[in-house]
Length: 121
Image (tube, rainbow, N blue to C red; front, side, top):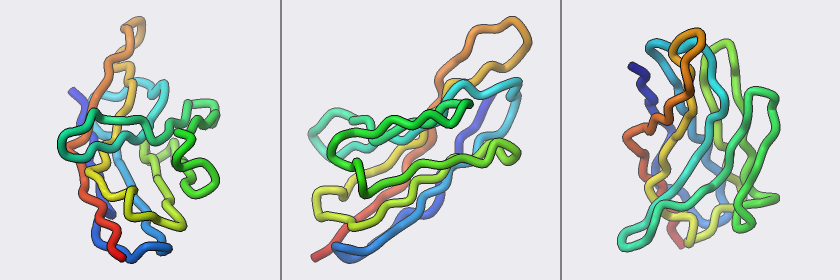
């Protein structure tokens, strides 16, 4: 079993910055990718961005140029640095990872519990 634990959410003013972290632990053989999604009430969960084990990143158009994903492979941790935050960035942010739990096994996708980010005017 694999656990993803997010941290770093909170309240920030528009134009400010916030950094989220997500640490993976448990039966980890390898991590294919880690990423971030977000969700607001009444809407579907949407991709924010991902980073692969080869450090290839992918971002939603709405956050390109403002958000940066990075990782520390030694700590199985992914970070989301959010700059120039807007009111519409307010959401619950979820960490997501595709993890291989043993040699020869297929990866499974895991989710964190979510962390609230609120951007105020």
